[in-house]
Image 1 (cartoon, rainbow, N blue to C red):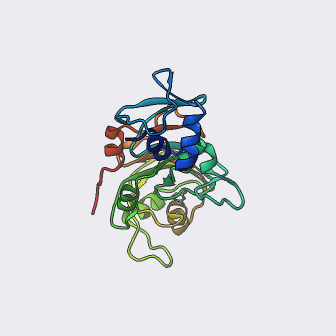
Image 2 (cartoon, rainbow, N blue to C red):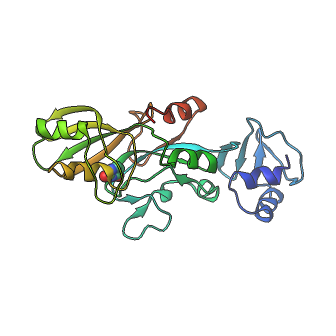
Image 3 (cartoon, rainbow, N blue to C red):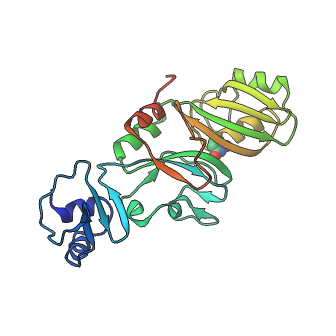
Length: 237
Ligand code: URA
């Protein structure tokens, strides 16, 4: 693959901008400056440097972010920060998108990718991937509420019923629960439907992939192919 094309594919600018970076001697491979934009290079496992930025060639990127509060999952965030501000420009340039959305006040695991097919497959309404949430409520959680959530509740303007599984009450006001669909404000609306109110919401797991403990708010990692598999495990039709 041409060096200029490799750089462009990794988000370092237009073809012209990449040619210019290369000609200026800004690009190094194995510590050596490569100033020939048309140089043919095998991109597989290629490690390179653009200015001070060290990079590894990735055909597609799959990312897990621990979303902080006060960040919207949209490019043109209106009232808060945008989660995309948490990423370097070369990743934004690649066109990464969030896989689904979390509310601005929800924290925790959100996946991002530039793989359109993957995104479509995972956000398809029929694709039921488990999502585990940890939530805090305004009022004490009652056993009736837990039972209702398990049996399923109706949500205004949505078809069908919405059930939670693997419910575990961890304190008077705290609950872990898993849902399988992903409609707008689903967890908050489910709790409202049983007469309570979510005051804090955190997503801990998608599919079988749990947020790594060491990942602090605002931090992100590239997923390995094995982690991508785990995050897409389908549990229910
Ligand atoms: N359910 C909600 O209500 N909000 C989220 O951010 C995610 C799930």
